[in-house]
Length: 76
Image (cartoon, rainbow, N blue to C red; front, side):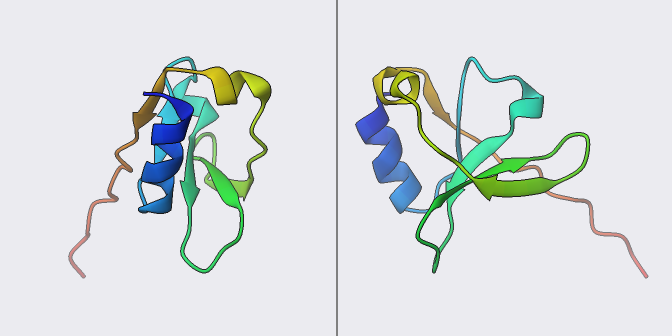
């Protein structure tokens, strides 16, 4: 999808990534109550920080929705 479509999905709470990113590159999300887009990296350990879009990102047509993996719930 195009960048402008990706921004609309981010505003609605969706998580996104670019097809060219590896799984270690993570995904981006716009969290409620925040003023910046965050990039979440899952490997080797979960971490997050502000994401700065590049000119390549603005022109990219490979944005896709990212399904955040759900941790299994363990019985206590």
